Structures are given as structure tokens and as C-alpha cells.
Image 1 (cartoon, rainbow, N blue to C red):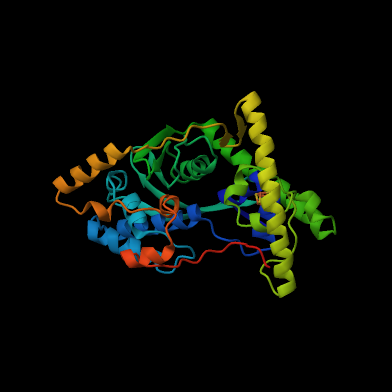
Image 2: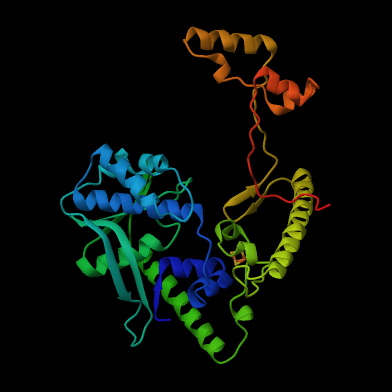
Length: 357
Ligand code: SF4
């Protein structure tokens, strides 16, 4: 492996096993929702900018078009609201360079590893303006990861100018900027070079017959939440099979699902006990804690007031308020009676396990 990208390197850094499986074995990975949503948003923005289209209808049509072949269902309205907003529209400038490919050697040594990537947006002004779109739910600064630092290093080499980077958080309509210093950019380059050389060394050892699981160990934690290999990673180990090829394999997988569900409940129980006694536990970017859940308790008087208010707005209150199955069971009526009253029986299908007898 000679060419690396920020996503390759950060995947290796967060879990070497996931990196090895994805980039070396090229095993198919179940796409995650954040990945598919992020790609869709990038495509919509890229197309709108290339065509100079700021029109709402264009964004709406594109949001639908890019999701037509998406591997998991996502609402076009979500992509539309993330992309057709002020934080994107204000970045339309004549000198924009959009989704430009970067490829550079990470050092002057012969055969040094290279870094590549696609820069969302940059333009050459008094200093270079570098922009990267993010669909994350939580904002972070441009130096919290090395991605923008690497791009800044490349652009500063290319133009000889200072680089101002900006992360645009589409969901939050918020942008966080940073003027990259030489130290920031050098840190990013050194980070990439160190990891790339480490990976190359390990891959060489694997080619000489060393155990890949020991060299690229699974490291369970925060990244597992969006790992496409989570379903086949048991206790931090990845067995070889991918898709199910026989009924026997399906039975084995089903057995593992039952064990994992039980194990998960037990582990959650132990962790909850610890948190109750000792306080929150932080795992990467996630925190386990005892959090309150708020809900509304409606008295009969309050429900009557709701019905009155809806009627005042000239709407049918019974299209909003329907008896739910849990409440109906309390009346202990025979279900045949529901039909006489005019309810229609409907069936939904869900994947679950039930008693086989
Ligand atoms: S599930 Fe977690 S530990 Fe397993 S490969 Fe994925 S990131 Fe690594």
C-alpha cells in the first residue's frame, strides 16, 4: 500500500482490524447511515456549485435523485434541508475549486508514502480559503482531527500562501474556522507519515506470514457504533465469513444473535450498576449516564382541552387522538367488538425471534 487518505489513516488509528478488513481484504462493509447521508449531501452541494445553481427546486430534485440508488433509505427532505441552507449558499464564489483531487508525497524520501483525498472546496484569495462540509450532529474544531491540517499542508505547498480552514456543520448551520500555523500543518503531515509507515511495516510482516490479527487487532469502542463489520466482530475478533451461504450458517448466526442479546443485556446491567454507584463513564465521544426522560402526562381535563383547541382550529381532533392498543386492553373488550365499532385490523411485519414451538 503506497497511497493513503485521511479516512484510511483514521480508520487504522481507531481500529486496525476494521482498517485491515476494509482496505486490505476489501471485504464488503455494511454502509452506515452517516456515511450514505454524508455522501448524498456532498454530491448535491458539488453539483449545485459546479452548475452555479442556487435554486431551491434544483436542490430538491437533486436530493431525490442522489438517493434513488442509495443502499439504505434516507428521506430526500433531510438531504434537502442540510444542503439548501445559508451556510452552503454563502460559499458560492466565482473562484471556487470544487472536489479537487490531491495527491502528494508525505516526505522527500524516495518511495515515501503518498496521501490523497478530495478537497470539498477551496479558493485562492489573499490567503487560501479551505472549506469542508460536515453532517455531524456535534461540532468540533478544525484541529480536532488531522484532515483539514493535511489539506492545508498540501494547499500551502501548492500556493505558497497561508491557509484558513473552515468546517461547515450543515445540520447545525454553524461554521468553525481556524488559521493554520506551520506547526499545525507539520503535525498533520507527521501524523500521516508515522501511521502510513507503521501500516506499511505491518503489511510487510503479514506478507512474510505473520498473524494479521496480532498486527491489526480489533479495538472495540466508540467507532464500533458505525462499523460495518460490527455484526461479525465477536469479542473484538473478526471471523472470515461475510454473507450467509447455507441454512447451517444462518442457524449459527441466529445462535450468536441470541447470545449477544443476552450478553448485551447483562453488560448493560453491570455498567448501569457501576454508573449508578460511581457516576458517568466516558467511552471516546460517548457517555454512559443515568439521564432523565421527559414525557407529558395528560389528565382527562387536559385531553378535553386539547380536543377543544383542535376543533377551534377547524381540524378533526380524532385524526390526531387515537386509542392505542395498550389503553384499549385495559377496557377488556373482545376484539370482535372493535370491528363492529369500525376499527380495521392491520398487520405489520418485523424481523424478530419468537418461541419455535
Ligand atoms: S466492531 Fe469495533 S472492534 Fe470490531 S472491527 Fe469494528 S470497530 Fe473494530
